[in-house]
Length: 170
Image (tube, rainbow, N blue to C red; front, top):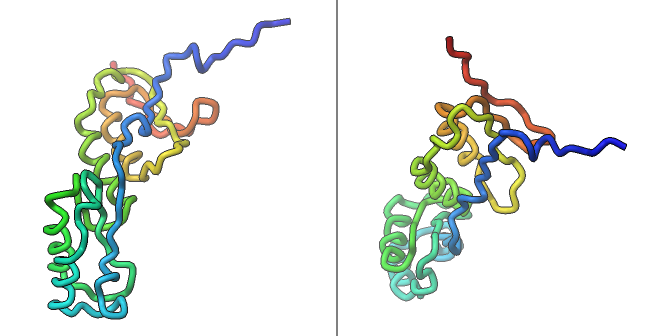
């Protein structure tokens, strides 16, 4: 009987796993509608009073996304005012939801990676993840890998989809 050889394990294929770079930390979301009259109408005096009385310490060292879940027309300053109250406590504040936060965090960290280790190598951007890696992170990873990698694929080694192949140099 012939020995089974794991060609994937023996290949020069480099795996770029975005989960390895997933920023650790608690994500929290603040829905502004909780401070609106019937979730729709912002009454400035009441809004400011509720923000003043809110326990902001619960967001200590957290990544906080600020959004409004209703169809209310909320003035821009309302989200900014929430952010001002959060600033002494939160690690990072964005307008949006948790997926937007994850995208923002990847946008900060991906440019700082040393991609030179992937020079002239076939790279697969690992596709399946247990953590909520946003699509924007995958697109950015491909963008940063492209100048270095010989080829870029997406997915798993056993079923990768080719995305890019560097032109042959003379």
